[in-house]
Image 1: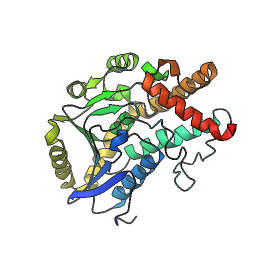
Image 2 (image 1 turned 45 degrees about the vertical axis):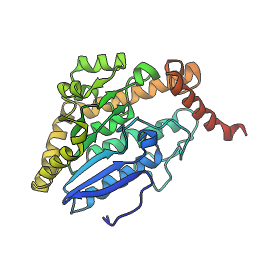
Image 3 (image 1 turned 90 degrees about the vertical axis):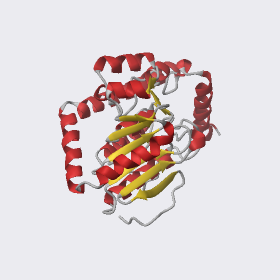
Image 4 (image 1 turned 30 degrees about the vertical axis):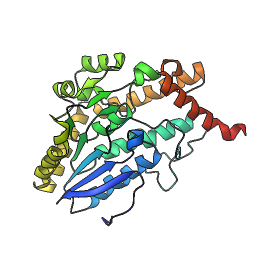
Length: 298
């Protein structure tokens, strides 16, 4: 794949040092929430860096005060990927009746894409500041190393506020102890940068003004190593984690996630428990649902 510069709408792709690619999510006004455009630009950028022989390590960063606010539930931008964007073999049909369409959509854009990025051959280092919420955790957890600022904080709000048992890329008990994962999901509380490091979820916590330099330093150190060996190291550790049941647990949890959506649909007609949402998010979600129904009602 060509490494020639190309234009992105919601990403910045740069080479801050030899052998290091830095992918910057660039939706600061939306706290870098992931819509279709950002998601598939991320896929393109990660593939581009993976295929570029001049790149040995990848940094995933974000513009603005917060790293990632999760999946974009607004009605802005395309709701589904186009046919030429789809990377999985499950196919489209995202507007099919029943749960056929929503299942296919979530499998493509949340489960399979994130797993694909997790298995990218080159080391990916997350450079995290501010808030990381729900779907943002999926992006953090697919990375091999995490460096975060001392003001970073993490939360999965899906169980506490949406009636779903965790995000689609369900890696909670592989990022912390089982009891910590249960408490975190059940209470919906924030985890600070220091607590995340104690739990083993992040590698380093640094002052905010040192975040970029420290992440780049680690990336350069790794990029200077034998690139084939680094690929083998990543494969070996990922395989060990999968032998511990990670992939099977994730697939099982993904289907429980779908059951949570279906339960909400059967009880209140929406794919999440709207009554549990904070007022501001509930208003945004209701606006999104109304926008989706508008073409059929017109």
